[in-house]
Length: 463
Image 1 (cartoon, rainbow, N blue to C red):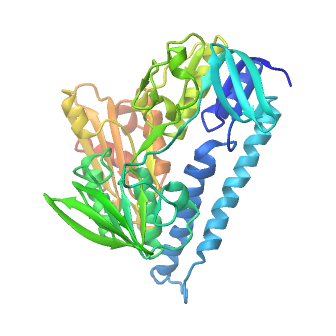
Image 2 (tube, rainbow, N blue to C red):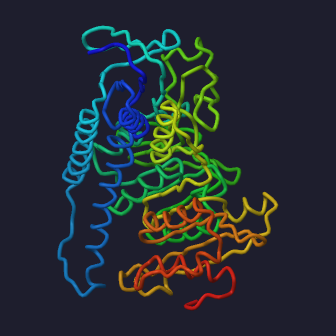
Image 3 (cartoon, rainbow, N blue to C red):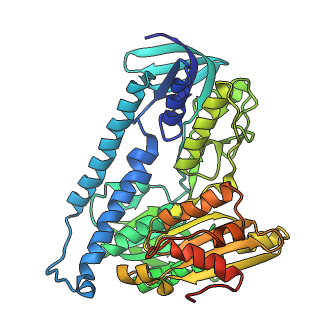
């Protein structure tokens, strides 16, 4: 294998492998270095296997609702080992697919741990020893890992991170989930659906804190209806680990109480994988474990870029992939557009699903914008009723003066698919008039997107 490249990408997650493929397509001699799994955390231990688990939970939930659809299912049960096995097989299939794509595009793959001893130099520790590579350009796509708080560290037995929760040694009976962001709520939703008594503790004033307040409130009611206990403005101060149990000291309302659980999932954020790379010696600036970049993912060190989770929020696979393509094209001399975080949708695959893009109503008002807000409930949509999914809401926020779509927020069945309609609208600088004049097919859930827009201007038909 050659040791000199136009581009070396460190990390083969959804940012890294996409950047490598696009660079190769543009004629750049490209290599990717990966220390663990092609496809990174997202494909192997994150986005994809969690969705496989959640799909099993969704089917299990529907089995218990069979009577609602005129069907009969007797003795519905599940095999946790089989559920996990399916999830791992899905991840394995896609992992193999990434390898095929890299080979097809003639990207050199080096399995090992990389460091940057000097600008344009990449040293890789492999099973055979060290390999010294040179690159005209380098992209850091090293991703992130679970953040662990002192005293709340995972042990894989009683206290889990997301990785342990994906391959559980047992089915929790009484589960504590620390953190109500996307990761925490998705695992809470999965295990709660399978029968675990689930308690979620959130330090901020409401669950799903980055979402619009109305959406968070709606989701909270739905989760509580499913049997979850949600503790907001609360903090886990201490975990006492015993034989087969954990005693959690939880502070809420100025008082500390204790509760016993057999399993704890810690989902309190992530930290960037920046150690051991030699970044400080190169002059790369770090901010709370993340590489500081400009709008074009440049680090300030010539020909060194950082994309994806290691470069900071939003911590989303699709953001990483888009950045990877942008940087590859920038290196190849193409005209590019900076990735705008505010135009990237966030999706949470709990039940009900949550999805959003752009400003919340509160953020828009804080920014001094006069707004028009439209809402439409799932109960007014024929397709939602036919699906047996009448609980949900679509909310849109417009600039009252210009008609600019500032933000869109949804909770309910399949909203993670619907949100892209508003994402495209924002990308094309769509106004309320454009959306009003768009014909939406019937019967679909997407009709609610139209009705919400109409509602913002007092023109909703079915509500």
